[in-house]
Image (cartoon, rainbow, N blue to C red; front, side, top):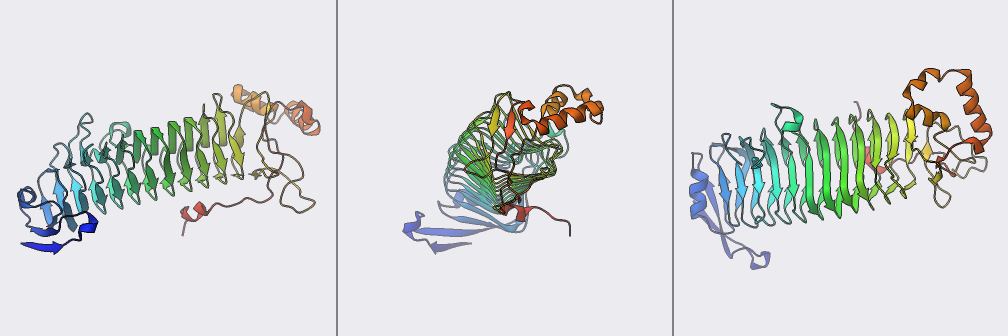
Length: 418
């Protein structure tokens, strides 16, 4: 049945829009679309629809949480080519397996401006949602589970964003597949409030300037947040728990802000910088990693203030022949392994902290030397350096360490047993 609804002109929709009740039978959605006008809503009856869809004008497809669209293993299940199209309440399964065509549960092409994809379930598709040049799209509140039938690197991404300025991906639960969100050659995107599990990278960023990655949670992935070949990105208030390699990685990433993040239990490094310069690391919590923060390949002029380094096996790995100061305006970072004292009670330690000495430098370049750690010669070298700081090599110095570890608000999102 077709029931007209009055839609205000101020909303930019047609004066008369209609709701269509679509019966559950093969081809019914395509048949109804042929009759529907711009701005109409198709409400799907409960059940499985075995068809693929191409949507080329402003309509809403509403599965009401009970309708499944099955592409039966061919191409993308839903392809959106028109503007202002809404997809909600659907379960989408059965995409093809062609990486070249980016077979997806839902594919938004470059003419699909301002699409809204919300509150859907996408299961077992090669790619979950492909935002391929669709400006100002919103992907919100979806559950996306990728494939598990092939090697991780041969799977598709949960959400793939390519050249889609203004795209917003928020509040999604993404699991399995390859990367949770993979971004390439885009800008001015926002990725916030998503949860990522059992993936290669939670967020994988390449050539994507002027964007925000905030309030996300990454659990048990190979790597949490990877920002590569990118400038002016805000990575703020995110959580990485038990990611196997790194929590946050910057590779050729510059002029960005990494603030308020919590990284716990990364097997290798809480944070890794490779040739990344002029970034700000403030108020982060790095705990229980192999290395708290590792700088290499000429990463310079980075601001490191107000962070907590808690129980990492190596707090800092930074090889340099000159000293780099990690405090500012009388405030530095917190170091759990620093036996500090604070006579005047101002919350700032009365002695500087130097996380690395010459023996650390030897161990990084000659790992076999770890066999000598307990020897009197090594202990003598370390005692000498502590008694005579002039003997220390260059590296990091925190002249004003914090006595207490400041907890970022993102700590509330860290999963706790019980």
